[in-house]
Length: 258
Image (tube, rainbow, N blue to C red; front, side, top):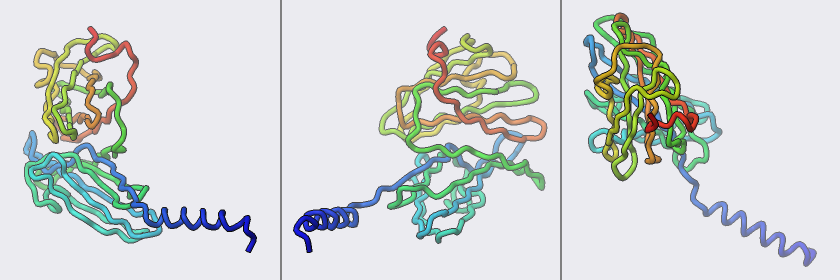
């Protein structure tokens, strides 16, 4: 063997040994809201989750509810090319009632997450609403300013806003309601404790507002591990429309500006 090749082969062997010994990282994604609760009009709201393993090896996955009591979790193994369905995941899988929480999905020792799909629907008596998709969030996504657009509060529609704090300390949110871009109608501040989800009606956040459609709520916070969402529900049919936040609003639309 050529002496010139010896150092190269030793380097390659060392690199291969390091790669074999180095621990693989976990990767997480988040469904901002799942639940099993009874709401207005005696509608039972449920969430279904589907996981798909598009990889070539078995995926070990942990599902957890970080803001639920005792932060429960489960572990599942999904074969390559296979999927797993969870119907009414909070009640059927975690055995919990009257609970709302983000759902954290962690694929263990993998650089790639399993594919996740989530949907929410309401059931009353024998009727059910159409499933509404919930956008899945990359766990590293953060912007200090986010907007929730297309909200309504009227005889026809009602709106709920969700604020989740998965950080280790309290998070302060500044919320501004706008009917015209850049012009705040009302501003409020709200504190959310660590590992807590708060879901409340928009009129509870802004009790002085009058009815209206197609308004925006800007949400500003310096706490990174936070997530927001909204839902607009038709009062007659109870059909829900999930609103995911829009990032990077223009600087002149900061929530604290008049």
